Image 1: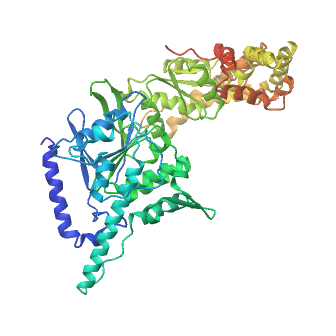
Image 2 (image 1 turned 135 degrees about the vertical axis):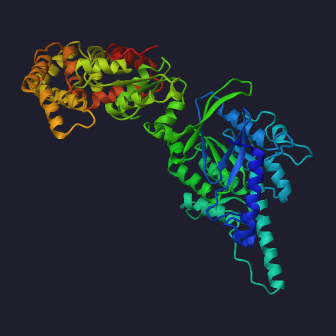
Image 3 (image 1 turned 90 degrees about the vertical axis):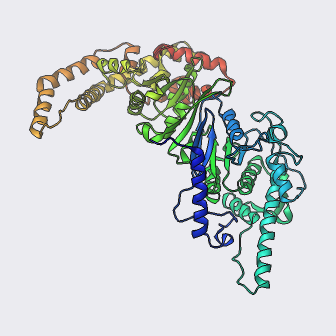
Length: 587
């Protein structure tokens, strides 16, 4: 097999470009897209070569984004700086044989705007915006980044706007010159173009239709409710949106744009629309996103992610490109969250607004665990088991916590061996009414000691009235479990399946299962034993009046205490109250 040679590949790509220009682009000016940026069509896939650390070169398809993920401290930003250094000769004024313009939009940037933008010639404006200085032999490293490319607070808004206006003016000037020449020669006028200013306004007005952007006179103004205000008075979100638009429209053709935290200051409702539109108008470029927003990462629709595992501080990264098709049993958002942490992972039921997540976040916050809610108990079980099928994720310790529900001890023991643990109560809602939690709320609200005993008796009465239904639910759950685990061999016919079911669920077996559930539920009388079996989500709501609260307020009280960041003492007491009823996870 021939070894991939990036230099040969570069030559091939150049030849292909010449071929395309010769046969498909009769008049380059007339084949520009609406922004005056040349787009090659006819279904030909174009790529750019990007040098990476560890002596690796990789081809990225133009018009397709890259998502870079990794845990905090893994070296994502520093990797992006290294990519810029390895590809862009202006980074340190070097002579890279296979150069690529890299425009890195840092997370640390000033959003301040001056009253007046200084408009320069295109060459000077470009040098100022990309390198930071027009002085001879200047470099990004020394001038733009002040020798701190990973951490410097970048203050280049005015320079970026100056380049944007200069490039726009140059484009319009060249178009007018073409029109003049055509008129002088009695030739057909070239078709109208859309200026960069017009395109920026169109994108802005698409995102923020109630606030019109006005770039006339090479100035920044916004019109809202018949009032006109200067760009420096825009909100942080508005200034970031404009900054991203002019950056994307101003960058040279065939560039790599690296955007660190593209979600910063931008409202969720606009975020995807903004980057979808910028990717659409700059299909000649490659967008690389470094993001903590998992929903945004999923929205990019990538086939693989650049996973940064670690950085040893000596320009040596451990990174890998993960093809998402190789991890089809894990939802993309879940996979992204898993590789974005260096902590042990615990899957729980519910979502990020649910009780499970709030309780376990607080309970395990000091134990180096990252809690990930993923729906119902079936998803928890499936995700823990699915992760074990991927050897590249072996370094991740993954566990699950589920409700007991009506599962028999044999099933719980089997799940425990898989790293899936159950609560010591029937369901998470019962944690609200364990004796220690009742005692805590009693003290918090200054109630009489007898209220706890009253609640216990109240719960026992409710249980007594519905325990026969609990038996039936537990019986049904056991039958469903045994059906799911019924071993049916390949090639067996319907008669064989019928025989297996008849043997499995003979009258004797059915009677035995039912008797087992009756013994489990009907013979219990102690309060904590009831909580271990009783599946009744409304219990915590029903006891609210016992504390002098409106129905449902008891649970809300505890949730609000958990959500309050400054309330550490109450959080600690809640954690201590429920800890004996939650699994002790491996250290």
